[in-house]
Length: 184
Figure 1: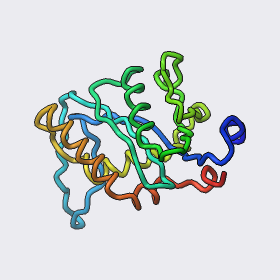
Figure 2 (figure 1 turned 90 degrees about the vertical axis):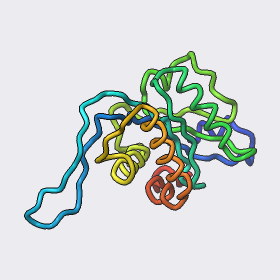
Figure 3 (figure 1 turned 135 degrees about the horizontal axis):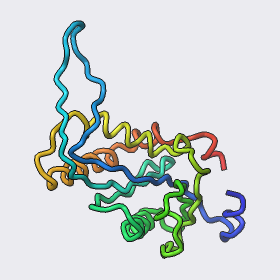
Figure 4 (figure 1 turned 180 degrees about the vertical axis):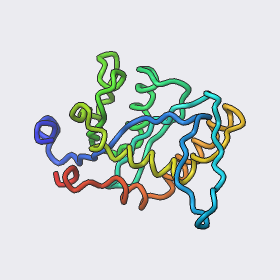
């Protein structure tokens, strides 16, 4: 962070953004359900395989997010995601985008917007990225234990879930803030 701050003009506000992508589809995960003791609750499970990817990023300090629901997970999708994040960074601020080391995140083929600097996490450390907790929250509350009837329904419900999340800045803040990352 100190190296990044040194490359920026004095007085520029730095926003820490976290980014990741999640696959959501017909082959849903089963999550815990409340039920009376001794009963076995119904939990639908689909074996079909249509799915979409939610590319999501949050800035917990501001309680904002930027997301796209896309059919594929590749470099082109990542470029669109970077452009979306860039449009949500506060005017005059600079975003440090913390992400994992997936090939489409760190490829030289990306045209990184001027108001974003990428900061890769250490290898094999997903627990450091609060987006993993955001995905778990969204699955537990809005996207699991259901049967999607069509691809269009998957897209619609993923968009609805992401919009519900971004309409709850306090949820983004409570899940995403990390003292060790936001002390700079």
